[in-house]
Image (cartoon, rainbow, N blue to C red; front, side):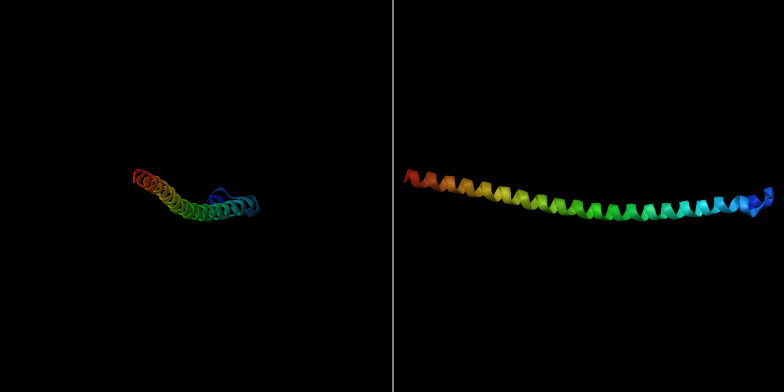
Length: 80
């Protein structure tokens, strides 16, 4: 508004620019809120994937241990 007073002129010359700036500021705040929400969701998804990965590796190691135990029991019963 100080630019308008120092330059002079009609308020109609500057009102549209001020409204546009307000609209742009509102859009920037909205985009920032959306980005923060996406970051939050992405963080939660990443932690869920990490937990799932740990469970899958536990299942893989469990199956491998079962197969090895079954092989060891077969070998022990074959020797006797």
